[in-house]
Amino acid sequence: SGYSPPRESAIRKIGQAELSKDVIGRVIHRIVVGEDEEGKEIAIDAYYLQGVNIIAGKKGTGKSHEAKTILLGLIDNGAQAVVFDINDEYPGLRFKEDGEESEYHDKLVCLTPGEDLMFTLSYIGLEVFSRALSAIGLPETSLLAVRDLWDRLSGSITLENFEEELDSDASIHSKVRSAIKLRLATLKGSGVITDDSLKATRIEDVFSDRLKDGGALIINLKGQGCLTMLITVQTILSKLKELLEADKLERGRIFMFAEEAHFYLEEADWVDIVTLMRHLGLWQFYITNTPSAIPELIIRQADNLFLFHLDLEDDIRRIAQSRGMDYETATLMARSMPPRTFALIGTATSDYPIRLKTIPLSVKTAGETKVFFKKP
Picture 1 (tube, one colour):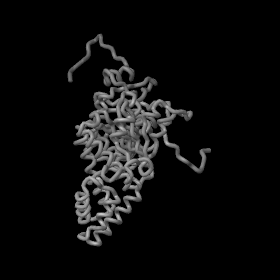
Picture 2 (cartoon, one colour):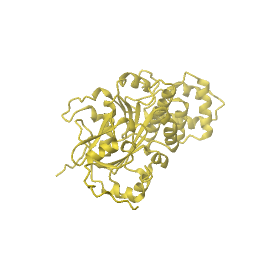
Picture 3 (cartoon, rainbow, N blue to C red):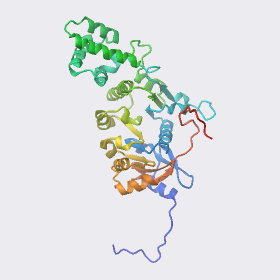
Picture 4 (cartoon, rainbow, N blue to C red):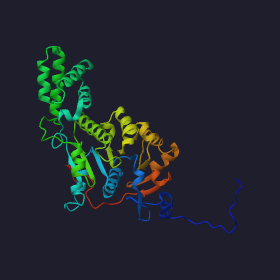
């Protein structure tokens, strides 16, 4: 370039703490996300997490631990969250390592579909009901009959009176009736739909009552079948959308944490969440060990990337589409990360990658896995 520094210039090494301070800038809503190589805590402002965030890394590298660290930081700042927990790990946050209740015990509402999380048919709505029936193989012609029955029942919809109306309608072909009844039996078997309003869950009540001062609704999806996950996730997302649009929940306060979302989100869901819900103030974290399963739409719109160790070329190539990285840079970063170490790049760091380590927490951060053989 022809530029030469003046003779009195000096070259010195900038410490990571100084570098982090420069790229992160002023922090008001403080969330500690990790520590630098000198062991100093690094905090970012929660403002920059309001968008789409991705935490990616292979199994056992610390990505779920980092997600829990961020979740607790958001709760400390008064935020609300819904967590789709695929491995039943988040309920442990209610307790300290010694088994005593943690400060987050009453701020975490943990529900399991079919046990203490159930919805009435009228609450899940026609669209979720139809998608569930379609997912278990109900033909489109039979779905038309379902929609007609639903409209006829109007506001008094339960599984019981839906079946009664189905049996009494002579205009419905016997094969169509049998196909619908077979799918209704499957829905009953999932345990997630109930006709007892006293047992039913209302998402708005959880957020406006039990989590009014900040906290998280944790949905345990471990071991759940595809149908149960579909009904549960679709109902929660549709209700959040409905409540945010009606201003019955505070916009911009709710964060969604989705562990391995490709197990329970379809392509249309991703589009709806990013293009519509983002404008309603539902901020998102996607935690995955399979970035190649995340649609390009999500990757390209990510505001922040927490990148742990990755090996597979397809995963690295997909994650390289985030934050303007090239494939060579993404490969170098992803494959050079030791366990419990990650690179943070995005709006929170002025798009400059900084390398951090996860921090220990004073609560239980992992689900207990029962094993037969003990470690020697």
